[in-house]
View (spheres, rainbow, N blue to C red):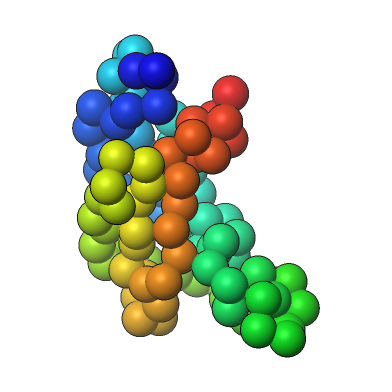
Length: 96
């Protein structure tokens, strides 16, 4: 279970870096994370289509992040979007 618990989280202009408690280090492209936001609006859950709300984004910056319980991270993006909840198990799976 420690493979799904972050030890350290940091980011720069292009990537998010997570070192997991089991020692594995992963990096995630910020633009890809934003374009694949799992919130209902970005995923087309309010009558839209998947990608319609994010497909136009060409660049993005991560302004802040916070933990959501013990299971997810929530990001605040430079376009003021902050409703996506990124599950830790999904982030880890994307790094395998």
